Image 1 (cartoon, rainbow, N blue to C red):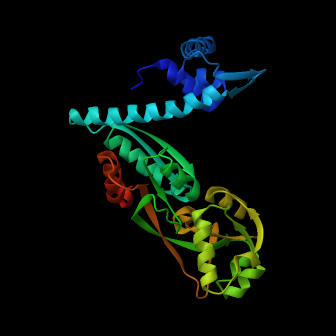
Image 2 (image 1 turned 45 degrees about the horizontal axis):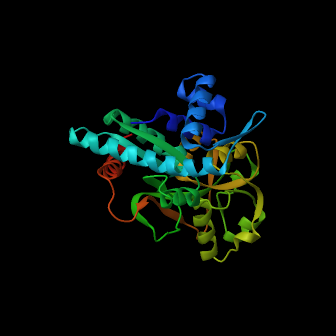
Image 3 (image 1 turned 90 degrees about the horizontal axis):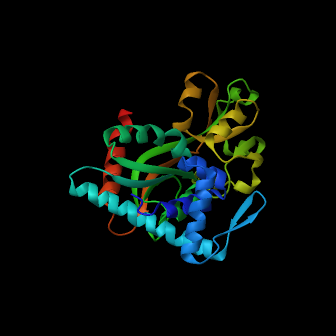
Length: 299
């Protein structure tokens, strides 16, 4: 529900920093976008954008209006939800986030099922590493998220979703694939693909290595890659190894593309968790949590 379409036009231009992209997303012409922005600038008495050739940037007034526009749209979303509930319809808007592994391997199927079950609910879906997603919840830019890792922020409430296991894998045709089991010290001799800093998966792996007496800094890191999908593609064309969630490699194991190497004495497990702000949460957030817990094994 948007009461002032000009504010929606401004918000879209401000987030895309492009009149052309805003016109495409809003299904209106570029001259119409320009007209709405000019009317809003006239109404506020402030220039909202600086235009330098084809580039666009926000003025100080534009940055101020963007901050308030985000708050206005949050209020609209809450109003949508409560109006739907007055009519006994499960509807409204939900801003969902997920850390990378969950976003790629688990949540898309659940979101599709959720939409089929509750077509009146609209949602947005944001992916990022655990640290980035956690801060979006803290900054009230997301309503609920699913994350991995062991970090805990006092501003957030945590509850368990499912358990996960992280294993060491290599390309099935590589020399390393002949090693069915290694001792921890051998990890220092194997080129590894690791996740980026801020990754919940990386945090869990590092903590497990420290627990068995290995310093993560001593590992031979061949490259750092931001997500499991890209790591798998790299693995399939290299002789390196990587620690990956068992959730992400089911197909590759089935078709014998990747092989698990056991590391003696090393077991890496973790909980995937729901996070949201402390305190009361909306009935829509609670509904989504229950749906995920009920339907995960049925997808």
